[in-house]
Amino acid sequence: MGIKPICEQSQAELQALLQETKEAYAAFQAKKLTLNMARGKPAPAQLDLTMPMLDTLRSDANLISETGDDCRNYGVLAGISEAKKLFASLIGAKAEEMFIGGNSSLELMFACIQIAYVKGIAGCTPWSKLDKVKFLCPVPGYDRHFGLTEYFGVEMIPVPMSEDGPDMDMVQKYVESDASVKGIWCVPIYSNPGGVVYSDETVRRFAALKPAAKDFRIFWDNAYCIHHLVENPKQPLTINAACEESGNLNIFYQFMSTSKITFSGGGVAAFNTSAENLAELSKSLGVQTIGFDKVNQMRHVMFFGDAAGVKAHMEKHRQILKPKFDAVLNALETELKPLGIGEWTHPQGGYFVSFNAPNGCAKRVVQLCKEGGVTLTGAGATFPYKNDPDDRNIRIAPTYPSVDELKQAMELFCICVKYAALEQLVK
Image 1 (cartoon, helix red, strand yellow):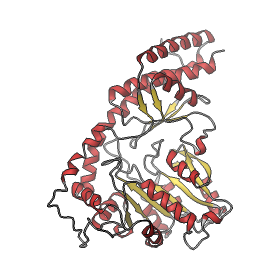
Image 2 (tube, helix red, strand yellow):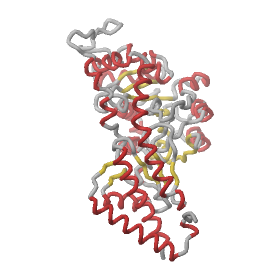
Image 3 (tube, helix red, strand yellow):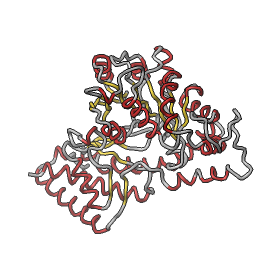
Image 4 (cartoon, one colour):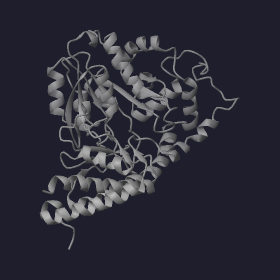
C-alpha cells in the first residue's frame, strides 16, 4: 500500500510520522552541515567556463573600436558599438537604442529611478516632489527589485502572477486609472523565482497600456532571457516588437547583463529603451560618469564574437545546471508529493525553483533548515516589505552547491517541510 497524503491520515498516524521526522531532523543536525543556498550565484564550474576570456587581452590586442574610439581612454558614454550590436541581437532590440554600462544592471535600474526622483522624466514633476509614488510588484518576485523601490520610499503594490505573467486586468486598472503609479517590475522570461515566461498576449497588453502618468515606465528586467534549462526553449514575443506594433515606444526600460554568463563581479550590463528615453537619461548619466569600462566591453565582444557564440556558451551552463535542478525536483517529487505537502514550479530556465509550503509554514521551514545547517533565502523575501501574507513562499536556489551537496540539502529541506506541516496538524 502506498504512502497516504497527510490529509487522509489519522492523528495517531500523523503523530508517528512527526516523531519519525523529528528523529531524522536530529540526525541531520548531528552532521553539522554548513551549506548556503541563500542567493542564486553561479557555481565555480560556471565561472571556470569564462576563464579563457582573460586571455583575449594580450599586450598586442587591438582595443580600437570599429568607430575609431580607444577603449582604454575616456568617453563613449553609451558604450562601444560592437557591444551594442551584441546585446541588441540577444534581446531583439536596435543597436542604436542600447546603452552599455558597467557590471551591474541593478546599478542602471537604480540610476533610472534616481533620475526620475531627482530630475523628473518626460517633462514631469520629479517623483521626490510628489505626495505619493507607487510601483506594481508581481509576486512572488525578485527581492532586490523590492529593496530598490523600498529604498526610495515607493509604495509597493503586490500583483498576483499566473502561468502567463502578472494579472493584467489588475495591472491595467492601476496603470490607466492612477497617476501615482509610476512603474512595474517585470522579469518576463523565467521570472524570479517562479520561472514564468510571459505569454505573447501578456507582452502585447503591456505594450498597449495607456498610463494615467506620462512618466510611467515598465522596468523590463530580462536577466534570464538566455538562461535555458531545456533544449528547445520558448521564444516569446519581445517587448521591443510589441511596442513597435502598438506605437508605444517610450513605455519600457529593458535591462540585462552578463553577470551570470561570464563573471558576476566583472560582467557587462546593458540598457535598452526608445531613442527619446535614451537621449533624456543620457544627460544625467553623463554627469554621473565619463564612461564605463570599455576594455571589459571589448573583451566580452572578442570572447563571444556574436549571439551564436553567447548561446553556445550558455549551452555549457545548461549542462552544469540541469542536473542540479533535477536533483531539487526529484527530491520534492519523491519526498513531498506522495504526502500532498506543498507546491512547486518546474522551471524551463532561470536560476530558481519557487516552493509554496502549507500556509503559515515558510518561516518555520527556513528556521529549521538554518538550524539544521542549510541557509535559504529568508521567508517573505519574494514579497514587498518581506511580507508574504500567507507565509508560504520559499525561493530555492540550486545553482551554487554541487549536485551531491544539493541532494543533502534537499533531503534536509524535505524533512523540514514535513516537520513544519505536521506540527500544525498534530493536536
